[in-house]
Length: 391
Image (cartoon, rainbow, N blue to C red; front, top):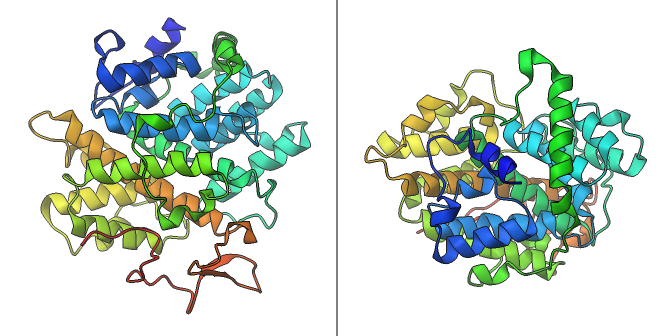
């Protein structure tokens, strides 16, 4: 396990993790919990220079993905492996393929690795993976059928939100997969991922106590755009805490007018693919200048086209004094903002179980999809606006 822990951080860039041997306080407590319930890896420890943000990503990811509530953990990890491929995060994708092997679904893991989910023998798993690929792929037609029950959806959408954040954060700070294909031989890499899965098997067999991570962070109200989590109080508690800590930690590094521009822009994004050239973002941030423009540019590209993030975009916001904590706060805000929007967009395609009595959303009788009441647009001045705006 120590070997995998070392491999999992070898490609980290721009930031550095707090070494486990030097961790204390909240970081030490979280590291111990990760080691007991999962395994230490760079997608989590890359948040460690800002301990509350480490607590947020661990709490949200643990309670949504690792806890087997209404959906078993290995199925969720298989779904998140597919999502990671769509989001162009080879680090996350390969680690998740190994975890699917560790959970005993070897055929599914191999098909996911080769991007041939349609050939998976298990019809239920196959349908769920194809659903994830459809809702996550820019420009894809959203499925008319959701292969989950109303009771399962908060857990599924929470997993989707958590991994959408982790993918984007890791896409920036993890320079590719720690497992390479020698001379391009994918079969050798596939075998290596299965071998790592045999090591990680013990992590999939450990009993995971639901709600154990909740007391790492203070309670917080559930944001309006996360209405879909309400049917599962544990998921709602985990995600509301995570949302609260991201807002607090980013308040000092992302000005309110930048935050509002990004949120308003994402509200109008329905998952459509962006042009190959990154010039599309310049029009969207033209009202800003200097560092404010750089912050908004990174957030929007990371949300809509993470594969277009490069050293130039990152270099524009890296602190000149080497303060990693500022960068971690900015990146966490940008990644989480995108993840919230994606989760809500997917939630808005499902049927009535997520509608609240007094919500601003109503069923469109023709499409049976959730749409904002009134003209079909979102009035950002309404108190129920999915993102809480800063004054």
